[in-house]
Length: 85
Image (cartoon, rainbow, N blue to C red; front, top):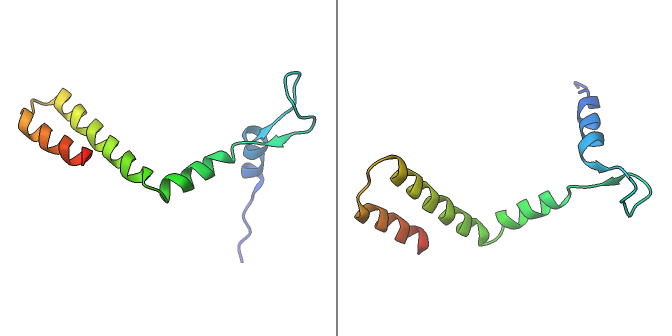
């Protein structure tokens, strides 16, 4: 079994994932932070928000494509209607 060095990961976590107390802090000891990212990721992955996000990305892609290349109104309307539906 190969052992992996976990020191780089631990030092990164100690530097960025732990809030160190200062004069404005409400805590006295270093406290983990950033756990909400996992909750948001799980919520987006398991809810209708994925569909909304996909529709927004499609709308943005159509808009970016129309900004960069000459695209007729009819294809834009079809793609944007599909995203909205």
